[in-house]
Length: 150
Image 1: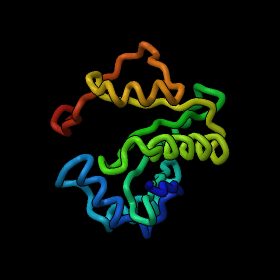
Image 2: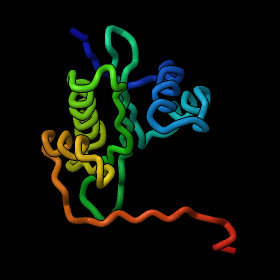
Image 3: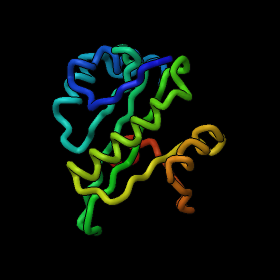
């Protein structure tokens, strides 16, 4: 049986996060040094890492969103990945719990949001089991091009 533990990632975890990010999002992404720098410089982002007997098997990235429009900040779960070999062993649940704890205790957040694919039914079922509910919002994305704004 796997021994899954979770903790907040540090810059020293950059090589492992790089490996996991390639498995999740594909090639052509920031290298380990870029990840190390990002983990050191963005105070509104935090990363949690899951390990199986000391080997990194998953991660979660949270973005804290502050706005003068609202009394308290919210956190957006921007990325969540667990290696297929360790799924259904509690890693994702533990990562979510740690992220929510960090959001509340460090940033005073009172809500968490996330996005997932409309056809990703296993992820939807998982998030609903964690207490997340669809809110009826529509999500829009636009790739920005400098030529559109000159």
